[in-house]
Length: 147
Image 1: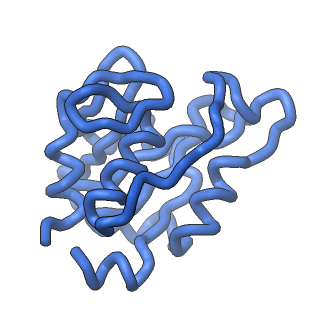
Image 2 (image 1 turned 135 degrees about the horizontal axis):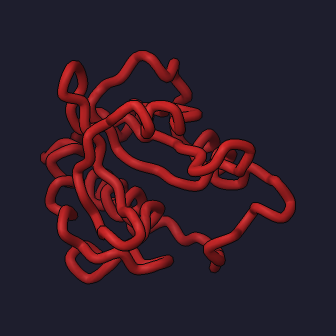
Image 3 (image 1 turned 30 degrees about the horizontal axis):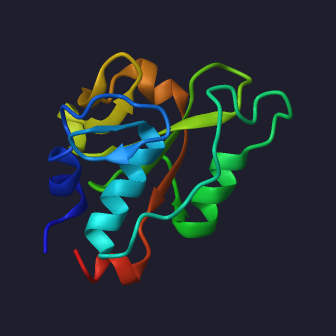
């Protein structure tokens, strides 16, 4: 069975499409995570309610953070491993609403994410991205056993 990073790399080049989760056709950052999870686990795509680009902002609710925390295992931000799910705040004081998957670690750290205007890409985990990182999660043992 392929590992999470290998699966995520097969999504590179997929166009950015809000609320989509289909490799090669389109996805947003959450769709990428959902699609990779489904491929790695063999489970169907987990459904999500419709959401707008400004979801959760007016209320200030950490909806995405809570949803990820309910499904994955929180870990220290400074202990990276390939396959970790990364949660970002795109603006200071805003809710966290961007996710990616750690690909490489160390001096040449990278992560894979779907980014509006760019699609799915593997980006350098640069200082600006590190400043935006608010949480890091690992996958549950049941998924790790499959990959």
